[in-house]
Structures are given as C-alpha cells and as structure tokens.
Length: 21
View 1: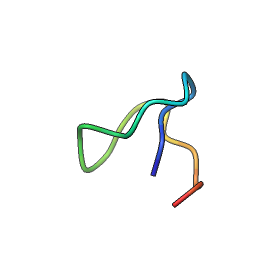
View 2: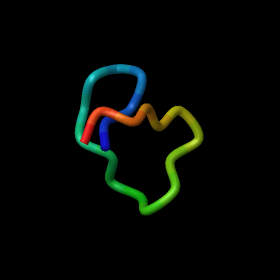
View 3: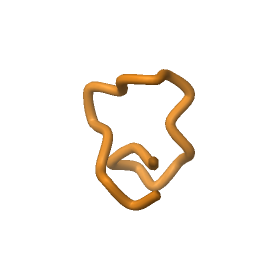
C-alpha cells in the first residue's frame, strides 16, 4: 500500500493509507 503522498506505507496501518498495492 501507499500513503496519500505516494510513498510506500512504512506502517502496517498508515493514517493516510490508500489501497494501491
């Protein structure tokens, strides 16, 4: 998954996570 900023999610559950696996 990626964050809203387009960066790979560092956390398993990111507050700004988008489902773009």
